[in-house]
Image (cartoon, rainbow, N blue to C red; front, side):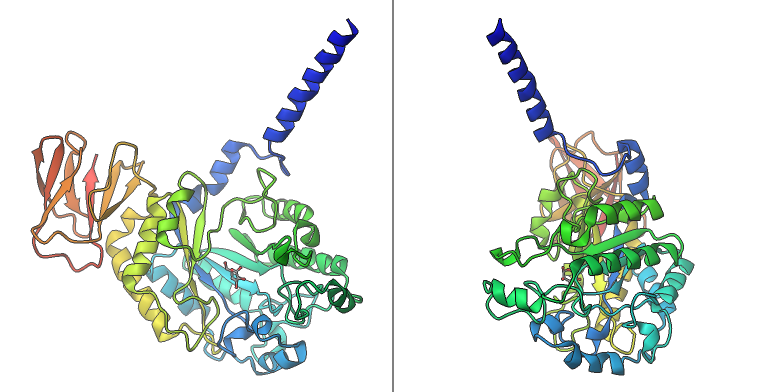
Length: 453
Ligand code: GLC
């Protein structure tokens, strides 16, 4: 009898243990349905603009220059003293974003260097105390909202200026040997993360209470165990759980990225953030909620001498491939120290705008193709489930104008070019459809065929 009771209790414990291991923890109480509603616009809009702008635009050689070159606060001070963005005109930025077809924009309110573009009452290291003399975040918010673009804030969890932010693996003042814990300890003797943690909490509170409705919050980033010697930073350093609770309380409909190191929680972030990955790496995110963040040329801040700019075709491929795998693209611009997009950025945005003007229906509200539709050779597919239109993005235009749609027989009702709604005839061939395109390729880098299902 006794042994039966013991084995019974043992089974209960085992079931509870398995349940605990499987069930993910939650921070809030939002239902699946509420979450879907909250994420609706974001999944619909698909294409956003990232803006990385700060003091690092002056050295113009990477937004990590302070860490890369191990600059002290004193050495970095000249960029603060000389910051004078006389051409800053966010209305122009917003118009450029809109013309490129971008529906939301996320600005660095503070990057790792610690400089705040907003008028925070918790620091003097801010735009209001430079020649700019005003709250640049406020102007960004007003300008983008006026163009109907949703606004988001990027906020760096790292801070290489704050006196209480402890020296870690990435800090400009880090010891030359990652394993030299004693040296880290010496440097951190008078630094108190708890004070810095409060600073984050207060600044996030300012950002989410002083600028009206904020659509996206992009927090960057956690690096637990980085280097393997305990000099990384994680959710405990940031106070991530209470921070996220505060964010949700202040802005219940805001969408938050996943870099708070809260992956163990089901609701620890709203979307995954594959950074600067190749298009071939995006397929594995299919079915998840995600946004890939990408640059024009490699760095995020303005980098004068970087000459690895992506072509129009590569940028379009990023956008199309993101949507064809059910995700978003946020494409970054790094304005110059004078506060404007440089000619290379403008040219890239204009070319995207030219394509989007004609083909945005294959992007907005779209996702991956339903099962049973295989992408014909040299094409990628996107699909709008509401209008039941399937889009073929023609990467290599067939020289004879004939395109085989494998297994598409009885699946389509009509075909046309998307850019001008001109009919495309087709014939059946066994189970396939042969689409007859004009021999002359339309004047779009990647023309799009719209199929009515
Ligand atoms: C990285 C970099 C950073 C950039 C960000 C954008 O984590 O630290 O410079 O802001 O990614 O995704």
